[in-house]
Each structure stands twice: as structure tokens, then as C-alpha cells.
Image (cartoon, rainbow, N blue to C red; front, side):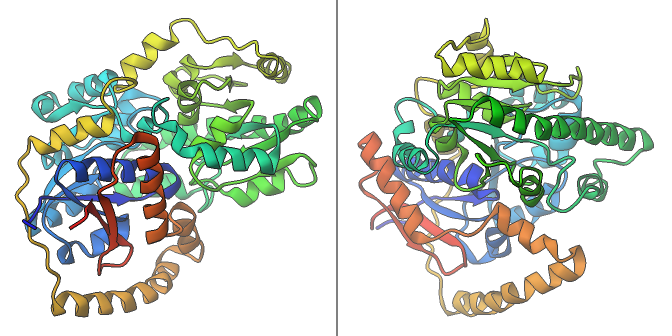
Length: 455
């Protein structure tokens, strides 16, 4: 068969990105692309061993400058979206932390979640108007009524395991980080995001505010447990949080479980009510038609995220929280006034063509050159060397970053197997009636797979 253009899709946080990247891959495959799906670090390390094409990165922050420079030097083209670009607190802080002009300048396309994100980025980068397309994000395609059935089996399994449950989604990694109390601040300093005393003071204030919320959520768990003895209380921590600390916080509380596994979507779809604060899961719950409550024991006009709260019922005290959950369980769900209009401002592709289709349209317009990828003996030799380097890498990371860094990486990305990609493609095919001609094969680069039309 003739050579095809290649699309490279790195995955950083598996529970958040994996299924959406597979959906994007199969849609792109139908449009004539061959797709490399792989773990972010493995894909970047093996970039010179992979076919030349276009890579969609997860952001355009300042850390991407050397990564993008290496990719373009190899002959690759670049696009990006921002995984953090839907729910952010202070707009100026988001632009400072996540939108770096030099990184943005290197991408041919930037795919925006919606009109609000596009407008915010253009405030900082007005010259980028021609490259920013409002497409929505394939993560939210999976929430749509015409696609969400891909998770039906997972939802049924969760309900068998836990019965009726109330989901508490936490978002407190700025205080309760896997790598410790100081890690978030120190990482921002290393990256250059914090460069002045004023910036340091702002991010420290943010961390202190998150601590207040964290401790209020910890105190609310036993209150919920006592108020709803016929329900399990499931705490799902953020991927970057210290999950063991949560287990210690709720130890001995009989119907409380701390569980972090799989995509958040089936957990949200299966719950009777969900509680959050400033979390993307609040938006997901709204789009999945689940009762969603924002517990807000403290508020801050700068540090609170607008969208998840605008789509949620509000509770400021433990008594209000219990009352809101009680009403939700009785079927008295109140959707905030104007929620639909506000969601549409922030999120494209709630209906109509999928976000993955709109992204594929934007990619096709770039006319990516086809590449005939035939890895030879040299590639296989390098891969053998890289496997040795991969075995040694955890020891190097432990020396440089401490013993917990490898465990943190595994929590965010526990690995991808060929069988789970194939299985999810089959689910997508069954639900949509498409993608029957799409196949998945392993590539010689570790943790990287080809998704494309069967040859």
C-alpha cells in the first residue's frame, strides 16, 4: 500500500488521556493517517526511530521549547492542544504557566477547547489567530450520548462492586502532591514559571488555599458516611495526589473507599451523586447528566475555577452538602440557571461533529507529507540499547529526584498493552458502527503502537 502521513499521539496521564487518544487515532486512521500512540516519555526518547509526521503535544508551556526544537530538527511538524485548557482558575496565571509564546510559535495548529480558551490565548498571542482552531477535545467526545456507551460494561462492573455510591473527586495536588508538600512549588521554580518573589508568594498562597479545601473535604467524609449509610463513599484522588495519604485519612470508616483506577468517566456515570471543588470532573458529571455538587467551604475570586462551579449545585457547609446530596438521591436535581449557555461558551463539539473529527479536519488541511516507515536493522539495534537504558533509567531518576519519582510516574502511566488498545477499538466500533477496518500493531519502539487501516 502507498505510504501514508503519520500522526504521533503521546499519552502522559493514562486515566485521563488514553481512551480519548485512541478515539482520535481511529478517526484519523479513517481519514488516511497512520498513527503512533505511545507513552509520552518513550515516544519522545524514540522520536528519531519513529516515522516522520506530525505530533500533537499536550501543551505549549515553556518546557516544550527544547522538545519542539528537537522534533522540528528531525523533520516533524507540530500541533498541540492543552490538557489543562478547559478548567483553570486565574486567566493570567493560566497564560503565564501554560502558554509560552516561543512554544506556540512552533506549532502549525492549536486546537482549543472552546471560544473562551481561544479568546484568552489571543489576549496574549494575537498573532496566533490563524493557527488556533476551536474544535473541542476528544476527551469530551466520550461523554456524548452517542459515544458514552463504550463505558457501559465498566459502569455495570462498578455498580456490582460498590452498589450505590457517592463519588468524591478530589483535586488537591497543589497541597497533597505525590512527591511531597514542596514539589509543586519547586517544579514551577525549575521550569521558570516562578521567577520573582511576587510569583512565589502567589503560588504559596494558592497552595495554602488548597490545604484549607483539602482539610474541609477530609472532615466532610465521615459526615457523608453517617448521613448516607446505604451508600458507599468512593474517594477518587487526582492523578498527581498522594493517594496513600487519603487512605490514611479515611482509615477505619466502614463504607468509605479510596480508589484510583481506570478512566473517571465510568466512575462518574455510575454514581448517584458526585462532589468536587474546582475540578474537571464537575464538568464531566454535568455532561453525563449526573447530579453534581460543588462543595465550597472557602471561596477565592482568583483561585476558584469558574466553569465546574457554574455547572454544579453549591454547598458551603457540611449541613448544606448533606441537604444537596439528599435532594439529589431523591431525584430533585437542580441544574444551575444558564448552565447550558455557559457550557457552550467553554466547550465546542457538545453536539454535531465529534471534536476528534474537527481535529482531523484541521490536520488534513496541513497536507502532512506521507512517510514510508520501514524500520531496519539499525532501528532494532537502537531499540535494544534503549531497552537497557530504560532498565537503568529508574535508578538514575531515583538518584536525581528521590525514590518516589519512579512510583509517581507509574501512578500517572502504569503502561499500555496491545490488547487493551485493541479491545477499546472494538468497543468504539460496536458503539459507533465505524472503525471495523482499523487495526493495531506493536512498533519496535517500546510502549508505542501503530493504529491505522489494515494493510
